[in-house]
Image (cartoon, rainbow, N blue to C red; front, side):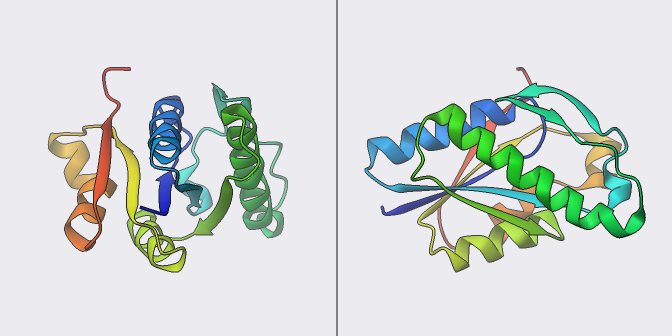
Length: 154
C-alpha cells in the first residue's frame, strides 16, 4: 500500500477521519493525501463552524464572482491547517469542486490511491433519500478498498 486518500468535510468529526487515515498511512509507510470537495454556494447555508483542527470557517463572501475562488481558498486553508495539525508537511492536499462522490472517485484514480478513508454521518430515512449517502455512493462505485469511519456518535 503506497497511497491513502483521506476525504474530509467541514464536520467536527473530520478530525477523527483525518487522524484515523493518517495513522493508517503511517503504520503502512504510505503517503497521505487529504481531499476536500467544495460544492455550490447554496450547500453552505451556515458559513461559520466550530473550530476543526484549527479551521474556524469562512471569511465574508461578498460577491458571487468571488464565491468559487473563496471556497477553494478556504478549503485549501482548511487542508493546510489539517496537515499542520497532523504534524506532517509531506501530506499532499487536493481541493476539488463538484459532486462529492464523483470527485472522491476521480481523485482516487488521479493520485492512484490504494484505499479511500472517509466518514459517514449515518443518515437515515428521509434525510438519506433527500441527501443521499456519499459513502454509499463511493463504496458501490470503486474497485479499491474503502475504510468508512462511523462518526454519528461523536
